[in-house]
Image (cartoon, rainbow over all chains, first blue to last red; front, top):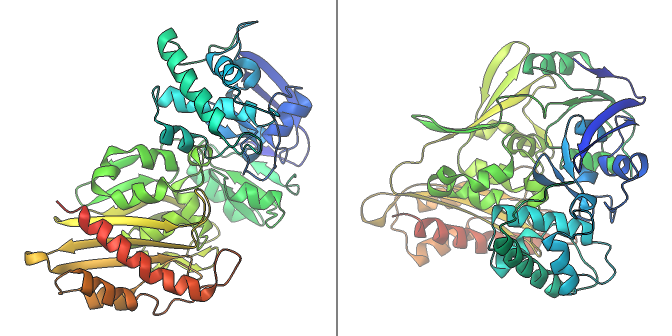
Length: 171
Length: 287
């Protein structure tokens, strides 16, 4: 049994294929740990209340909101953040599709949108528009009106099917 | 936003978790945490001790038994939504699970977590009440089963003792010629229900209502059965007129709040509308 008083504890997890270790209070939210302690600031904080989805990460293969998890719960977890999508200079098909279809304006929601979309496409490689809209229900965008985001995800689905690539392999 | 400080425990077994609940002051079980952490961040909840059971093994399953369907406490909403058995035989739970929050929430939130949180506006407690679910509970002195009518006591309050943990939810197999459905009335996808109605109906010979359970959510401090409407329907041939007459009796005993999502009067009216709709939905699913 692990008993932890309210002080710093060591958390080790794998993010984008690399092992990270940091110190966190039990009450520290995972998103704060990723951004402030591990300096991976690609994951954004939009609302901090679990509504906006900007902090969405892949956590042991499932898209989750990292503000709705404690850092301490990431002990031993395998995490993918937006930084892990591109392979060096080569963007992930989802990132390419968002670029080509103007799937972002200010870009603040994009990291979360990309990970939520990745989860959707891994499960459903050829989604309908309704399925896409349902898949990103947990991600708010205040710029685009979603039209180009939906278009981007559709385009990414096509790219990924053609390329036979349905999962991101973190470098 | 950061929760208030707490001590964190990650027990390796259910028994350890129960011992911790027994001995630690103001201890709270953390399952998926998709409601609890939100409350803690807003500091509406500030438990002194968090007992994190997410890593306990063997509590995430959906199993068909001879007499009932067993759902493990840590089964996530997404698993309910994806389950073929639930989709074909316990459709009401697919309806409810698929309407909870969003994909990320459904990827983490658990069935028993939703039950134990006992938010009167939540979807699963209402659907489970209509499905007549019982709750298997483990405490320091062993196991007991909480009956459907006894589980929800008050707003955010269940019959669970402070040192007890729900381990399984059991839904008695529906008889032949049974249909079920849950409809959540909300302004936006992912919002809490303004009114949520779950219906399980069994037909006898000649489309006569053999049995029916109608559960209402978000209109009282706990999910409640629309007993008057149910007894009006039993033994009657189910046509639009009978269903509409029964729906008129739906609000009996309901005591909904007024808030920014809808007034009390509006909710009372919506009970009738959504009883009619879920009755028709459930009937349409009987083959």
